[in-house]
Length: 186
Image (cartoon, rainbow, N blue to C red):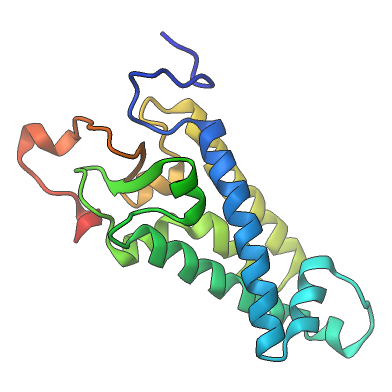
């Protein structure tokens, strides 16, 4: 049995390190977008203070949770819209030649994409730092759980009945044998 850390050429499923690469690219894109949106709508200092936690004691620092929520909502829409689109991938996943599908191989529906992307946006929407750390740790553990699964699904993927696969590859879905369609494509 191959180790889960390695990707075999025969496997249609995206491995851990390929997904990390896509996440890093998306992180750079998202950081830029969040910052630019903050500048355009006049919340630049809110976004900056929520991202870098500077200016402690200032009005901007006190309003930083608003910047954090703004960032979380932008991340939510970026990921959900990208992964439920006809491309089925964020820009980072497209660069890494990956796509997100339902377990039946159909495009992922918008609300399932919102659920699937929860590890990315949920920590930003919690304004209490201690709880934010707990949510962040749970989100990270969901992402790391990819290495322990034959289909390379994290908890968030399983919850949304989603797969991250190499673009253009075919895989045998669980529904193929039973004739059922995935709830994630609805």
